Amino acid sequence: MIENAILEAGRFDPTQRELLAITWRLLHAIDTGDATTYAQLSLPDLTCFEDVCPYRIDGLEFHLSLIRQAEHNPNARPIRFDMLTPHVQVYGDTGIVTYTRLMTCMENDAPVWKACNETRVFVRQNGAWKMAHFHRSPTWPYAGPGPGSSGSSSSCRYTASCQRPNLW
Image 1 (cartoon, helix red, strand yellow):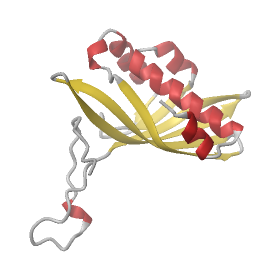
Image 2 (image 1 turned 45 degrees about the vertical axis):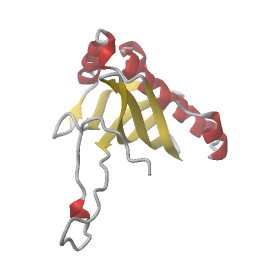
Image 3 (image 1 turned 60 degrees about the vertical axis):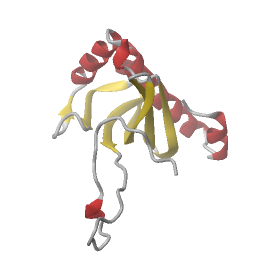
């Protein structure tokens, strides 16, 4: 979900708003199993780095197969997703959209959250924006310096599972 207040507060221009809307449509297509929309908004030679694989993934078909699986497994879908702190950069026919994606899931009748930092790179071809590349990295809670730690960032712990955020 992109709140209108965020769009207005961010003072996005029309091209930036268009890129945010396309990004939202891509994310919605993933969550609803809409492989057709995802394919229409992506280039066939799409590349990505994401947490499901330790190396670059080339081509659109990998993603379409996962999206088709989601279409037939509604219980695996988040019940909601939000794009937090979106930032859009446009350089001619290239657009870069970065944000934190917060997904609300249900486990044992209780909400849990999973967050990822995402970057989506678009190129404009024949007047239409298409996603050419994306990068997704899971976020992790900062555990703070451990006993005897010098306070370095090595005390951060990573967990890929859905988890309740520490809101305080």
